[in-house]
Image (tube, rainbow, N blue to C red; front, side, top):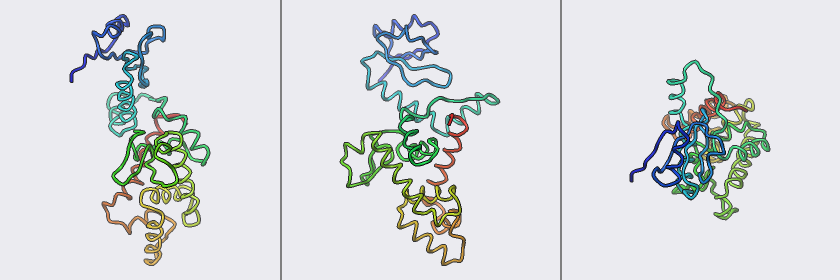
Length: 247
């Protein structure tokens, strides 16, 4: 499928978009008054947006998903370093779910950017994500307590997931050396399961090692185990978000 896409400097070209001569236009910070009959995507850091005709709802959804995944990725970080080296770049949003993430993070005492990092690694911010094991939605929840339509509601899904993370953090707070370590244990349990993390802690204790540090406990897993990578990746993404997005 081919699309006609134009980088718009002259806002008059938006008329070609309205008439159907063009399919999409990338406009640099267009004023609202020029956008009648059009719909626009989330803005990039420079204020530019993708514009489509207002009835192109599905196309706009895909564009927003692409922008969300791109700006949340390490690839975007590399692009920023390459093309904006030495410049301060502060983006305004991680995803279209930022308000929900902020509210849920506040309710459990987390930095919303950490919760966003979890969502990114669970679903890449795709609300309709589902796994072969039956996990659904933004935070890939598996639960018999909630019907599918609830778990596919962004606000409900994030609320359920964040409450579970809070429960896990509290569960391992007596084991962990400090709040930072308790977050690591919570992330590990979210990915692997709380009972399996407890088994790892028991093995670590049998070896006479400090069980209050995730770095010791994770050594009971194979080097390439997905949970080792998951905890590290979430924390690395959180560190990346913390540099680019305001608290």
